[in-house]
Image (cartoon, rainbow, N blue to C red):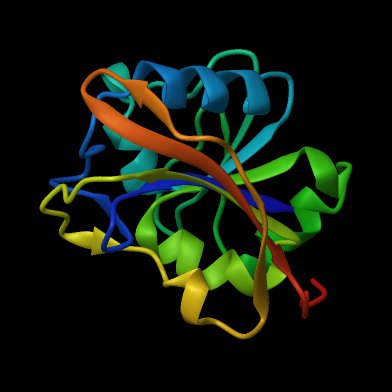
Length: 166
């Protein structure tokens, strides 16, 4: 399992249950990386998508202990149920896509974290753990800086040196 997200200079990841920045290159990377795969999220992340609809061309698994079943995505009620479900898939094709609580809960189980670093401060109200300060994570890839929609971004990959089994 991997996590995928964008983070500002302060490791901010969201504001008012939405992204802080509109960055077409980041959205393209997200779409290309996750299409045809499994995306795992919390209920607020699902609500933040246009019309509250799941992402197209992906298997959407939503952890929502009190949510109603839906025809357009798979609702799981507990971590045990979530882990049982994602074990059915190739772990390299499972991506945690938010929100903050899902990232925090599932981070120890992720082999890699794909972070689009935005060279700006977005006024976040939700944050991701600073992986540069976590001894269990190693920065293993950094792209050249890219200017897009008025922002400088870098695509980075952090590798988890102590992956927890699920």
